Length: 487
Image (cartoon, rainbow, N blue to C red; front, side, top):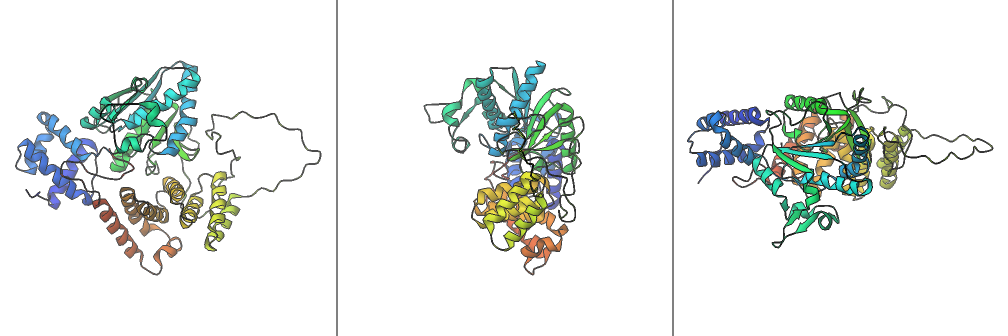
C-alpha cells in the first residue's frame, strides 16, 4: 500500500498539533517519516482523513491514541554511560558534591532524568551512586525518570537490555551492573533498580513530579533540541524553580542555554560543562564569544589546576603545606592565554599541528570559555587524524557559542567521516543556519572563493541526505541523531 505524503497544508496542521500536544518541532525534512507514521496510525484507528484523526487524538476520548502517536514519533535511541566526559564529571565531581551536601542537611538526594527514554540514563546515574556508596556508605536517594513515551517506559521498568545499548557501555559495566539471562539479554542488577522510579510525563503539558527547590540534579540531555525556543525557555525556567540552590542541570552536547536563560552559572568540570543554580550566577551573562579575542580580551585567567582535580568552585582540593619561601625570589613569567592562542593560530597556519593543538589546549585550560581555542585545537587534531579529540574540542566550541558557524561545519564533516550520520546531519543544519551571519574573514578558508550561499545550500543538502540515510520504516518512529533521541 502506498503511503500518502502529506501536502504542505496538511503537514503544517499535523506539526502544529504535535507542538500543541508535546512541544515537538519537526521541520520539512521529517515529512516522509511523519506521513508514514500518520498513515499507519490512521489505518489502525479507523480514520479516513487527517482532520478526523487529529480531532480524535486532541479530544478527551483520544487519550490512548494520542499516546500511541507520541510513542511512534519519538525514537528510543540511547545507551548506558552515554557521553563519557559528562559521566566522568558526574562520577568524580557533581555527585560527590551533591551527596556531601545532602548528608549535611539530612535531605534525600533527588535526581530527575527528564526525557529518560528506555531507562539507560537513570540506571546509569544509579550505578554511579551505588559505586559511591561503596566508599561513603548508603544514603537515601530518589531518581525519577520521566518520558512522554509509554512504550519506552515499559522497557525501562522491565530493565532488560541487549544489543547496542549494552555493547556501548563503558568497559566492565556489564559484568558489574547486570545479570545475564538465559536468552543472552541482560537484566539490571537489583541494587540499581531499587534507586530508580519511572513515571509517564509530558514535559510540555504535565506538571513536574517535584516541588519548588526539591531537586538536586536535573539531567535533560538531547531533549530540548527538538523543542521550539519558547517551549525550551518555559522548561528551563521550570528546571530552575525546581532545583535547590547549588543544584545542577546537565544538557546534551548540542544543547545550550545561550539566549535561553541567564539564571545559571556555566562551569567547566573536567572535560565537560555543567550548569549550576547559584544565588547570583557567576557567569550567567555570557560574554560575546563570537568576537575575536584579539579585540575583546578575556578576563584574567583563573589559577591552573590539574586536569584530575575538581574545578567546581565550592569543592576545594586539599592543599599540601606551603614550602618555605626561596632565599631569593625570582619573578616567574606568566604566559597569557592570548599569547598561546596567537601562537597556536600561527602554528596551525604553518602546518605544525601537534604544536598548535598543545598551545590551544593550554590556552583553554587557562581560560575555559575561549571558543577560538577549542576551534583551533579541533582543526589541529583533525589534521593529525585524531577525530575523537577533534570532535570533543569542537563540541565544546559550539556548546559555548552556538553561532560559531566554522565550528559547526568542521564538527559536521568530522562526524560524517567517523560514521555518525545523525550527528553530522544536525551539525550541517546548524552550520547552514549560522553561516550567513559569520564574518568573511572567519569563512575565507571554508569558502575558497565560493559564495556563502553556495556553502549554505551544500550544508542543507548534506543535512537532508545524511538524515534520510537513517529514515525509519513505517511505524518505527522518527530517527533523528544517534547521540540523542528524543523529546
